[in-house]
Amino acid sequence: MQIFPWQLFRGRRSVKGWTARPSKNESEDALNFSVISGVLPMIEVFPLEQAALAYEKMMTAKVHFRSVLKIGD
Image (cartoon, helix red, strand yellow):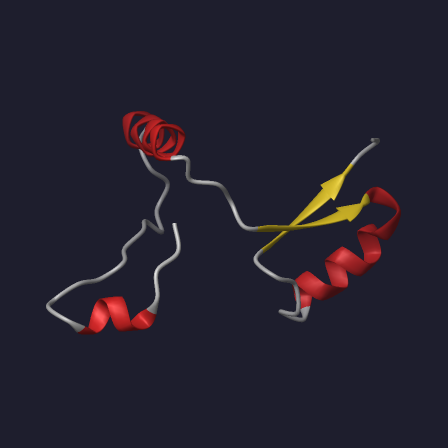
């Protein structure tokens, strides 16, 4: 799901998430919604050999979205 800032300007709209650990039911509901809606995470994949680079980019806020290490093929 992609949301553009201009979509939030009209009316009283917001995007919310949770910062605390969700309950089991909340997590299951969120995962089920993701599957039904076709929501996919936005990630940047690094081969395991580039783990140091992935970590450096993550720590300097230069990674795009989330860092994921790929192990094997």
